[in-house]
Length: 390
Image (cartoon, rainbow, N blue to C red; front, side, top):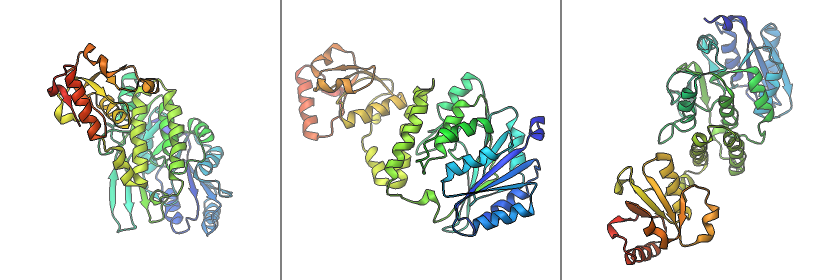
């Protein structure tokens, strides 16, 4: 094991709210860690059951190992922050009170950390609300160290959206990672505390942008337990307000990064997934417009016709996939040109013949309007074979 791992205490922080049924197994798994230079900080977040008493019992029994903080119900992010402020370790890890870890969890993560600012593992999901079973979830990017500029570009290009239907490049959870205390404390202090769903992502991805070296592993010794009453299983009434706070938090961070061109398109995909978890039909509506990939050869030069909802959706799909080249974007309403922020030439239909193209893609929802546009284009000499309707 690397020397740095043996010299520094690892602080493991456990925020707990009404966890009397699960926290005993959680704490026991931490007490049994083979890596001994750890401290466990239990944060009782205003529990109304026996959670606080259970925490006190373990502190009295393991005074050299366990610290307890009692607070009123401040939420998981603030509870984690309280734990970090009391931590004496150079590195910190987070374990949820519903979960548990294998006895070599800390030692195996530290074996890989070397000089990195963060080590990232996978998780083992246990769904006990249906029947007890386990499912391993890994990060979408390759295992290894990411430190050079070339490696960072590879990482950030897939960090939130790695593959369809949806795979994270780096899993958004805080519980499957080890962080540098000084970096994570600053982010916990500054993050919008109103975020309750996606609060881990609001910390993890900004942290990854700050980290000088990132180590990704296939360590799956963290057991993430899903219950019927898990926060991630609920559809809160203010889910869309929460999504707004989360989007603003991540967009601000990504926009101010030199990697924003890689990150912001992925944020769109992530927010769709977040909404999909609440109302799948809304997710399907967002994706109801699909670029006619099957009708157009890859690398073709196209003119996109229509700057409404459908046109914007097709434009985003083209930009993400780099499937073809947009020569110009046409619309009858010149007044909306200033609303579309892109370097693509924005033109009126009468200017189309001034541009070179292989196809014109009509991005208009109403069938009758599309039909009229096709006729108008044919009247100005456009070959109908080059006019594509999705």
